Amino acid sequence: MKRWLKDERGSFTMESSFVFPVLFAMVMLFIVLGCYLYQKTIVFYYASAVAERTAFGWDNSNRHPATGILSEPAYDPLYWRMSSDGVLGSLLKSGWRGETASIKLPEEIGMVKDGYAGLGERKLALGAGSITAGGLSFKGESGVINAGFSRYVEIKLKKPMELAPRQSGWSWDEPAGAGRGYLSDPVEFIRSVDLVRYYVQRFSSDSAQSEGGKENAAKALAPYRPDAK
Image (cartoon, rainbow, N blue to C red; front, side, top):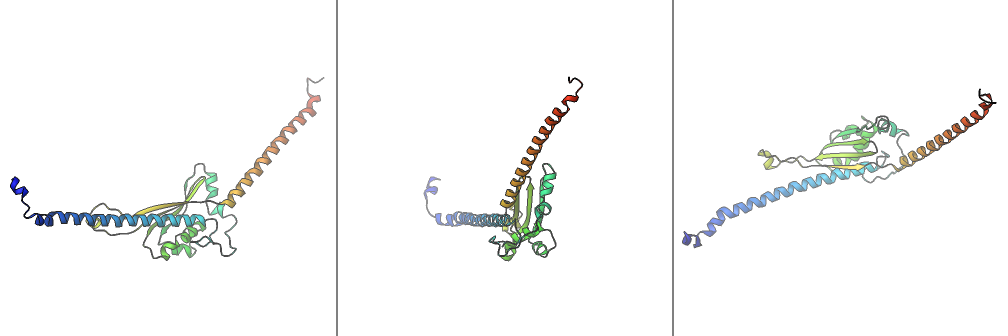
């Protein structure tokens, strides 16, 4: 037995028959895994980029969807935040959380751009227009989440990808990713702060005047009290 193990004859045949196929299978597996992870990275990158671009231009639907530049002085309606953005619903309902607008990608982008939806849907379609313009085969959905003071655009994408393990019945999912872009509106924030300051000052002055009026009324009615001398 030891003599047979020390004999080197036939070692090349053994390596060719067993070792090389195993190495080849491992290399192919790493290549497929690398392609899968690369696709997941690309999907996550596009989801994050679309979400950030959409959130950046949310205050004005006339901005360029890719650069955010306002080429001409065009603005949305004055009270769009109260009606189309769901601010009124979030103020009236305590702990309210939900989607104010959502679209399916990419099938609803063209329909929304043609005017068959509200202002929020049109903004989402403009932000996600780069997906169809670039000929990318992504599918998913885009929506605006209103959670009180936390408001953000959420993009969920997946890339249809056919792999041999998937066709064989293995549990490999399609590459998918999600991105968020938080909405910030400096103009509306300053306007809200000024509004709160105005009403706080108004209420404090009214309360001070009411307390002074009560004291004056008490002094005027003091001689008419039954126990007054």
